[in-house]
Image (cartoon, rainbow, N blue to C red; front, side, top):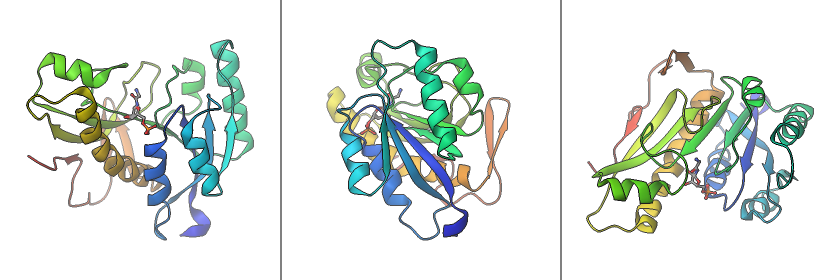
Length: 217
Ligand code: GAR
């Protein structure tokens, strides 16, 4: 499997715990993808150090004070120069231009800490608690130009404990993010995902966990 593993770039802006989950998953000999490059728009992103510690190539492309199109063009050129096949957004807090997104259609995925289409944008856990939902969760989806939107690949449900703070809910959801992101990337790298309108079909037998993981329900 090693020789044919798909080259993945992970785009980050901060901590990089989802990046860590992907790096760990990719250590398995049968994992169909390898993390070839980590790109951050912030030089102080903690995830950069994590990548370097694992011998993964990193790049910082500062976004501050730069035109959106110019930033995206720089990222795009780098990804192509490095032979990247698939892109994972992992806490990458930038809105991408439709032009950039179009160049990676069906090959770029994102993780978001809610059960989309609920609670897009930022302060997601505050939004969920304020709305009084009893179940939140996380979503891995294909990236389309609209923010936190696109065909859904995998979701995990997380019950909201009574009285939970946003930080407590974030921790519970993050645990599930680390489970579903590596699984979604595995399917993508195995070419098993077929986009059918708004839906995603998973070719072949799905693993026992299925496309919805509900750990505590
Ligand atoms: C994660 O919770 C991820 O779902 C979220 O940012 C966090 C990054 O954490 N992404 C978004 O909100 C995207 N809209 P990490 O840097 O530890 O992976």
